[in-house]
Image (cartoon, rainbow, N blue to C red; front, side, top):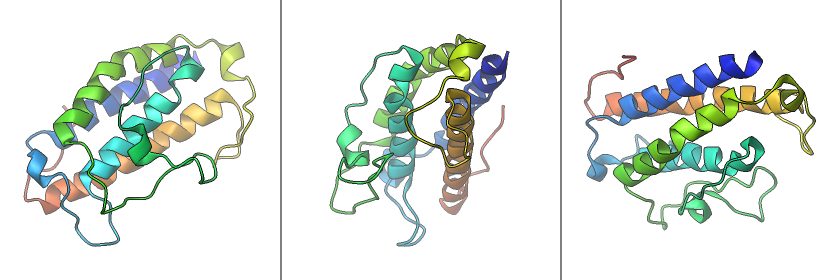
Length: 166
């Protein structure tokens, strides 16, 4: 039952991710509000990469071809690479394609997890202090929500209407 609830959260994120990027031109994807704030191409790629990284835990396969732009194996887990202005990040339409190509399978993978799988331990901890798969999925849902919120602020700074929930 827990998997169905969290799967609904990820399904909502699928809709919001598409809505927050609607109407934003690829040429606007690398605009930064300030040097301290990541741009849309980095944020969107980062959360797309994160979903693909955890696919094997859901019994899924799939590769985000821009993985290396968002990951640095020399960093401690989860090996996230900070934004780097010397790198060329993929266009928003390209990121959106990979997000949408994987969205349905990801949500179904989460939805199909049983209670035994959800309560299974992980070889690493999570920021919420719960080292079960359910704890990880709870954190990932919060992580996506936070980044989609950041994207919505950048959207507004570009002069666009607020993100739709429809």
